[in-house]
Image (cartoon, rainbow, N blue to C red; front, side, top):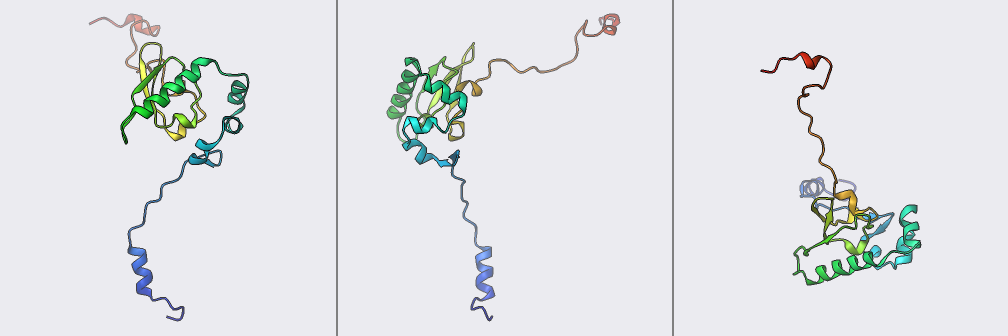
Length: 155
C-alpha cells in the first residue's frame, strides 16, 4: 500500500472487541465530581427557578437534619454496600448531589417506599419517586356502569 498502513493491520483493529465507554453523568453541563465540589450558592444557580427561590428563602431545620442522617448512614455503611434506609416524610426535599448513593424511605401516606438516589435524580423532588396512589387496573364494567347494563340478568 502507498499510505504506509497494511490492510491486515486495519482489519485486525476492526475485529478487536470495542471497549465499552460509559457516558459520564452531567447536570447542566457540569460533571458529577465537579458538582460535589461546588459550594451551595453555586449549586443553587444551576437549579430551576422554583428550587432556586426555595433555597433563597431559607430551608427549615428538618431538611438539614435529613441530610445529616443521610451522611451518617452513608459513613457507617461498609465499603461497596448500600447504606441503611433513612425514613422521612419530607416528600418535597430537593435531591442534592451529596445525597447520591443514599437510600431514602419516602412516605406515601400509607407506607415508606425505598428510593435509591442516583445521579440522574439531582434537582428533582423525593416525592417524584414515591407514588401516592395505586394505579387503576381496568377490568370488566360492573352493574350500573351503563344504562343497558341494568337489564343484564344476574347468573
